Amino acid sequence: MDWTYSPAPENAAIANLEPTYRPFIDGEFVDGGGEPLKTINPATEEVLAEVGTAAQEDVDRAVAAARRAHDEVWGRMPGAERAKYLFRIARIVAERSRELAVLETLDNGKPIRESRDVDVPTAAAHLFHHAGWADKLEYAGLGPAPKPVGVVGAVIPWNFPLLMAAWKVGPALACGNTIVLKPAETTPLTALVLAEIAAEAGLPPGVVNVLPGAGDVGAAVVGAAVDKVAFTGSTEVGVQIQRRLAGTGRRLTLELGGKAANIVYADAAIDQAVDGVVDGIFFNQGHVCCAGSRLLVQESIAEEFLELLHARVETLRVGDPLDKNTDVGAINSRAQLDRIVDLAAAGDEEGARRWTSSCPLPERGLFFPPTVFEGVEQTMRIAREEIFGPVLSVLTFRTPEEAVAKANNTPYGLSAGVWTEKGSKALWTAQRLRAGVVWANTFNRFDPASPFGGYRQSGFGREGGRAGLEAYLAV
Ligand code: NAP
Image (cartoon, rainbow, N blue to C red):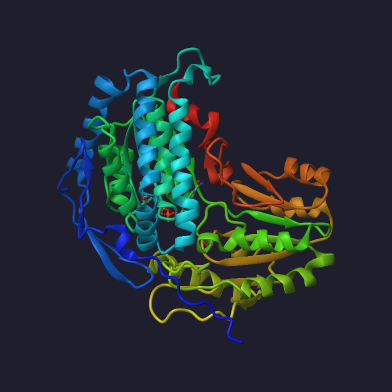
């Protein structure tokens, strides 16, 4: 009997793709002074649209518009009024969710199942959550009369383009700040539709400005006369930004990379743990800062666990991101694919054993098969460096102390996971893991009420929940 699935492609026309997109400054889409860029569909490498980019004078104009909007309108508006705009934006995001999901999948390469069921609903949830805070800030425990910081310069990466935009816009606006947002060069489209939605919601001009462009535009936003910088991206660029802002008195939060350990004890519910480990690393092609990229499995069950893991990974379907059956989509850019290929080759050279799913890869587009490295040593590059791709490094341990020591043996500190049937063991382990977020018997769960962020080389500051408001308020 043939058990293959029939193709179930989502209709690309739902994205309402425009041939050209432009920067959004002071309430209008305008011609930017920068060199236009072409954004591609990584699943086909075909050009999706031409996008105008910002030059230095556009950054200055956007920051001046944001300053004016803050001083004259938004910063003075009662919280209950700001909330109405934010609720309206959140509602329109929810109403246009199908269009946004298809557009995100086309521009990013992630499976439609994820953009439809995770990215867009979570983005809307963040906006709704922060809309609810706008008139309650004096009860947030951050002082009796917290004030906005002013103008926020925000720079975001390509792995969750709309969600990261919502993580910045939601708290900034709820707290009375205005924002100048720079999306990633390879995924600018949904942030520009969010700008359109802000305009549709009647948001006063200058409150939200979106400036597409490459790293130089990000550097110009960070260097502009903004009061706070909110950066999500690589540790390397985060370090440059921190150096640049040191001594300026400007506020900064950094959400950077990670190399999370996912610890599986011998007493864990093994099938659930296998599924959790698979979701932890292969969700969004592994382009996740908090991905469980290091599996630490207790030695006594390692053989059985890896057998089950291989069988489960074999069932993952790699292919057309617009197909509703696809589990693993395209790698976002040629540069990222090259980096994954190089780091995997380093794993081979250093003596780890590579296991690859036998799934067929599409003939065109940027794809990498789900890969598991076994026999990994802590000194290997694949155990230390963030691969940001569908590659899992497997290490083993004998005792809980050894598991914790190995999990913490990383310069990062963003997330971790623990799988055990014993609540006390989960708590014992979580208390010792040096990571901003620890999931127990689950992984990659996000809730707007729950603060997210790291420490050490994963950055500082929190996003989400009450704790996340602190960065956007002068308290
Ligand atoms: P990236 O190269 O650091 O880029 C992030 C953003 O910064 C992009 O918009 C980028 O523009 C811009 N940029 C580049 N150089 C800059 C500079 N000198 N000054 C200011 N901005 C600059 O990171 P990425 O490769 O896009 O994203 C992957 C990284 O983000 C991973 O390390 C991942 O772990 C991290 N991440 C962290 C979190 C978190 O919450 N902790 C969440 C998601 C991702 P271009 O796009 O044009 O290069």
